Image 1 (cartoon, rainbow, N blue to C red):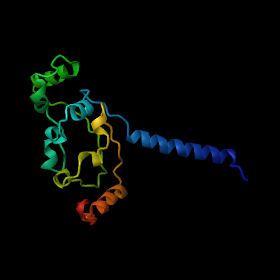
Image 2: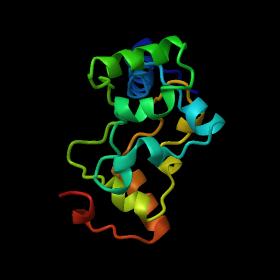
Image 3: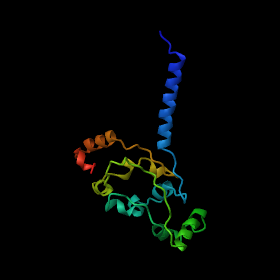
Image 4: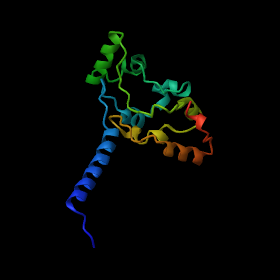
Length: 165
């Protein structure tokens, strides 16, 4: 039985570290101005994703909730919580909350949220586990293969121009 030489072992180890590092980087946590828990809002209080992400049924983007949307509830709920006080400060100053994007798609891809949501595709199909997260992290890498598998399973178009416009 042949044993790999030291160079081969080092190269293989570096390759594994590189692939692992890329995977971890893809799922790195994005810092946010407000510590927002999907777990509390979605799992504990059963708030539908579309309540906050109102654009999901109307446009290509699901949209990021406005400070006004947060204040619908947080004018009276948990007003003494430090994170809610931050929201209230944005509200008072009439400034939007500068949320940072969590989910990234390849630049060449057009993903119409409204088409998916209105067709009944559950949010957790593409955002698995987000309903259990205190800090939102992209769990899935949106590769063409993954999208094509989903389209085939659902019996929808796999024509290139469906998603690449």
